[in-house]
Length: 257
Ligand SMILES: [Zn+2]
Image (cartoon, rainbow, N blue to C red):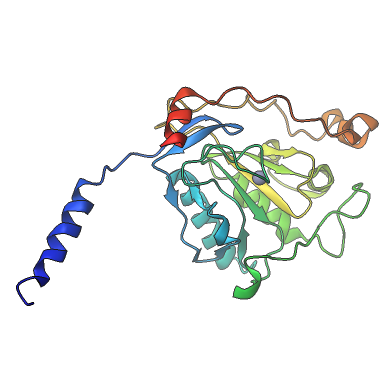
């Protein structure tokens, strides 16, 4: 008996030592890509907690995990509450069976505006708090607060963050109220939905040459006529998703493994 015991350790060690360590790489576009060597975000940390763990959508490029953790630390240190972190990507990224067209290359994460800590029992099916008033013309003044604008500003100021998607009413509220240095407003982009959470997207990391960037941000704060369009009749028609191009060949291979 005693002689057999030590065998366990060397076998486990050999398995571990021979496991290929793949450097993280975002491949393809947010809406048509995948993630190699993605890392899992810990279920909770300073100032954040991850929702719906059973979905296994807590993987991302390490640069994304760094931003979430740093934003969590800032949320805690400034006394805003706790970040409720929704979906990142699946372990290898790629299309999700439901819920998102993007979130495919490990650079996207959804974060709720509601910063009240959630009891563990609620984290798998958390109730949503909309911060936009019914009808979508403005924010709900009972649920919006300057701290939410501060959170968006803190998120936008990370150099790696390329875009934050919010409901147009939220962008309009920021355009109306933000004082001082407003350059960060450029990163805050109006989009359909996003009444209870914002969607944070990183720029393609330098270590991911096969990552496909979105078109560069247009110049300016995005507060003028470009924003007005969102409150007109054309924006009321949510476009139907276009036919998906084929996944990049590397992704098709990675996701088939
Ligand atoms: Zn999202």
